[in-house]
Length: 561
Image (tube, rainbow, N blue to C red; front, side, top):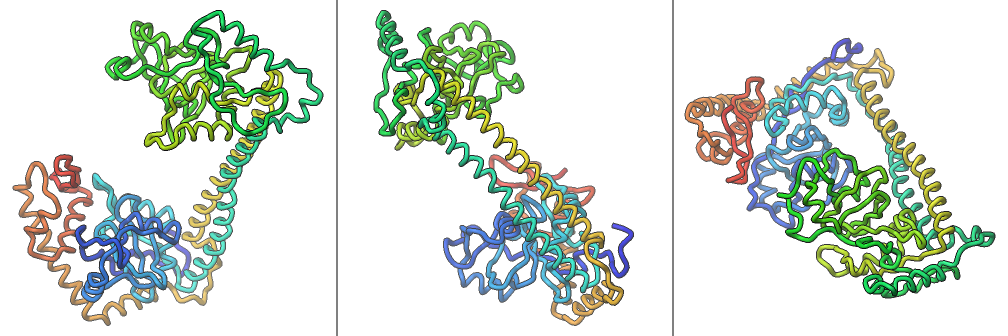
């Protein structure tokens, strides 16, 4: 950060704020009501959305005691996340009353003269974000008090800070409105698609088309297929619709079950192998591909990250084979019923548990028609009803065989598929443009912030008091606070003791590490000073310690590097 505009100065957050954290609140002191107790995740939500539904509290008595002894966040103070998503900054507002988790959140206490609105926005700038993440250089990223104090910021004159904040607020209001409207498009697209599918499978979409169309009689075709199946005991057992929905269909349509719509060939409708018939020990790096629920949901069947079985195992599972053009349906999920068509160019594969395959009878339907039908509300409602009351939503093959699919003659099926795919292609293009526009808004926000902190967003005024004078006032205010100065001197002295304590312990540091709580029980000095010393040992360039999660203890431990 060089070549600053006239009147600007480069300084650190440590020169603008007293930076600290909170008095530790132990987990057994958490309550279900009282004063809100915020962790990093709640501060992040406040910073991004302005509100949070809190689930943790501390008692009023504990809050009052800590506020009296150690202080509590006041209007204008900045709360910054020190773990998780680092550097999320929330400016305390009028009416806020809360306490917060030590080490997870840093507390930048306003010194009165600093414009904390400006500094809060600086935390979103690229320069400050990079410093925050460079400071989080431990095994588990943390933004320490020491790193925060050393974070460099370009500071304009106070009057210009206010102009910058006002301009950013105005522009942010516009961009937030644009983001809201663009984000709504995803919901609108979903609703439009569902509405189109509802029209398609009620007959409304092709109502005009039917008037001039010469179609085959799907009822007569179904009757012929049923008659031919009577010659095979197995095919004769194909099940019709178990319950006809109340919805009315056009005269030329029929309610037909997947069992009857499936081809006559053996295993044209089925599910993946059960239990021990296919286990992880059967998996191979090459051979015949396996199809999982995740593949159907993604509609992605590339060989990348695919799992296989050898030819012998595949032959053993021949009744579960799927070929190009077959329809695949998930039989579990929230809810079940995702669909995909297995690509024609793919070699035969084996479906796994919780997958259903249907190879359609081409005189009655097509995979493309069934793909869209099962995605429509009328089919989803039936699937949901079949899984209602089940802890893990799962659709049995027997129930799936008998659901009711509204089926027009083949010619109209083809027209319905054509119209759906054409309309969806158009709406997907619009949705893609909206997504690109949303990305551009985000980049525009970043560009505006960059201009703001280069001094290019608002005009400079030669009459503005230089930022150096502001810094001088802040230093003077600190010097006028003897209690605070005495406390700071005491902390520095104790800090040396905390470092000495850690340095003395390093030669005999346990190989399996030690928890911060155990260190705290051994150290007689200030909790905050020990915490700062540990953070320093974790984040220094030549860090002596690292944080490691101990699975046996289910806790973070500090180990020597």
